[in-house]
Image (tube, rainbow, N blue to C red; front, side, top):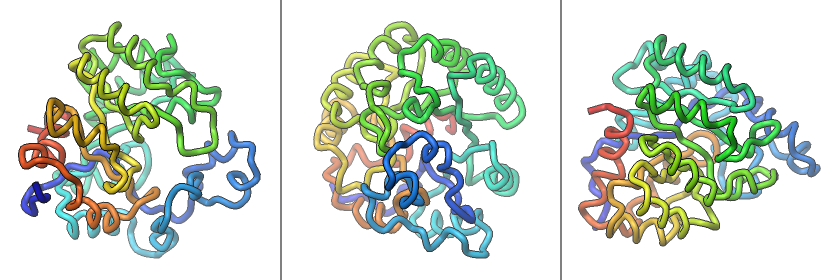
Length: 288
C-alpha cells in the first residue's frame, strides 16, 4: 500500500517557471472582484498555500529548473505545451523527457480544428486541453462549439483534458458541471476524455460516469495528494485502477516537493500505484 520508490512517474500537467505571472492575464481580465484583479499574482492564491513564487523571476533557465525538480522526484516524463518558447526548447532538447500538448479555445471552432491538425503534424501532439470556464465567453463542456474539436481528437486518436467542476478562479461554474460530460461521451463513444482539477463537488457523479463510459478518465491536477477526494481513491482501489491518472500542478500552484511529500500517505492499494503514476498515462498518450 505505501507508494513504491521505483516507479518512473509520468506527469500530465507540468510547466516552467516564467519570469512573471502574465500567463494568467486572460483569467484576470475576466474576474470582477478586486482581489483577483489587483492583489493576486496567481488567480487562485486564496486556495493554495506556499505557491512556489520563489522560482518565478530567477535567472536560471526555466527548462533546467523544471528538469531539476523532475529528477529530484523521479518524474520521468512531463507533458508540456508546444505553443511557447520554453516548451518548444524543452521538447527539442529533451525529447525523452517531455511530450507535447496544446490548448484549444472552442470560441474559435475551425481555428482550433486547424490548430490540432497543424500541431499534430509539426510537433506530434499527444493530447489537447481546454478550460471551459476560462474561455471568453465561456463555453460549456457539451456546447456544440466543442463538438468539432472532440471529433478531431477521435480522428487524431488523442485524448482531451478538460477542466471540470467548480473552477478555482472566481468565475461562474455552470459551464463545467460534471453532468455535461455524460452527453459528450454518449455522442463520442471513441473519445478519450480526461477531467482536470477535481470535478468537485460532483466527484461522486464523476465516478459513476467513469463506470458508465469506457473513455472517461480522471486526473489529479491542482490537488495536493492529501486532498484527493475519498471517492476517487476508493474507486481506484476497486473498479477504477485503469481510470485515475497522476497530474501535478508545478509550478502553477503546487511545488513538486509538496506533492511528493504528501503522496506516500495516499491510501492506494499496491496494484493501483504503477497504473496511477505511469501506466495509465502511457496508455492514453501512446507512449508505450
